Length: 572
Image (tube, rainbow, N blue to C red):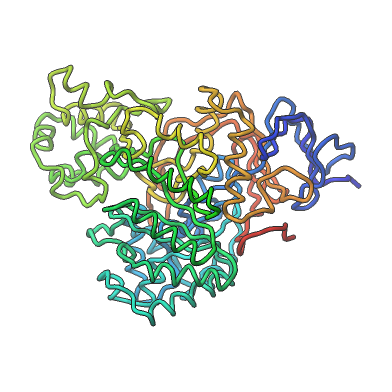
């Protein structure tokens, strides 16, 4: 009989701790790593990893697979990029708890905040639950290609308890807060990883209604956080506009965390309209860390940007009357019609804001729109913006953007960084990456399906900052994607290649690692479309000791499970 179920032989082990790479074998029995070193026994299956990196599976703590996980066994695109565990339910949006009468409200909010089409969710969600525990039970009945963990979403809790008063942004009374505290306590006991909330003005339904949690008072947040304290587990995840006073807002967050004693993470990005606020926030987080108050920023390794194109859900002319008349046509036919001089003149003469319900449209400008290209360019120069090109060519910026969109039968994308790019370069995310208190995240896997594709940031982090720029060594970059993110979520059973840890592993061809230009597929329920990109360089991805991807192709094996609550030790 073989000594091991699987042996990964002769690879360069980057174990997730930040230690220097070393040549070693990895022996796996069942769902556990049994040995790392010179493994003498044979395996029922063996992978030759000579010349390849062998790393822990990546842990992504900021995703939105809350809907997709209900109907799909494949958590693409994250699972294509070496992610083996994802935490979903961020930003205060989700689907439980939920009374039957409120289902439409939660779908509308998810549609507006995370750009998942309502028709997709109406067809894909079967609503086999009302309580948060019932939602977890529904998730537990499906196997997947990765493990998933769920946060309790504030918007769902608030609507469940307060109904119309939540939608109208009324303050919670003490009875409301007591009920929310009990819901939080129960959710943690049933397996929630924490509680998420949003205080962002950008989080709206397509009708423009703000998220119900926008103005939640400190006593409400404290009450829910105390529910986590009652349960003895859970983290608080928050996204905020940090307005009007970012210092006061952070002080409020700190008081809540000091009251409950649970850790917190918050989204830290650079708003182009307030380009220096992030410096104060990182300073506040660093001081909290020095004071022993666990508040950590979650950051992105590059600009946070949208992809505008005829194939996606948004472009600079989506709101014009004439474009809306032809928006139903296939992309190539639409591009052909738009190339007609008369149609072009009409669209360019119309107001693009008139019919545009896209919540982020007001933040877009031609000064930060760039040709995306293939390979994708995530670090464009300001002199290459559409506005700058228009100035040099003596055209209007809309004319330049229009012509880019219709080239190549409408297959092009325009890239618009909406955050982390106010300086016209990547110096802001680079500064955050240099701070070990910051957590890698914000890929938003499962959300923004047809206009943002940042879910592959793990691959980009390694190729751009590691292989291309050589800014950090591979050991540190892998640590940021594995043990650091796993530890932040309370997943201490994974994120490190060591005996006794969960057997989640990537075998990576460092020289081939990369992603191609995005493309659109219509594979969601109700024919919904989403952006994906071809990924290469992951020779094998292993979840719980079983190979889920080989050479970038799914094997059909689905060992991924719902993880209920923080894991200090591996559960068989």
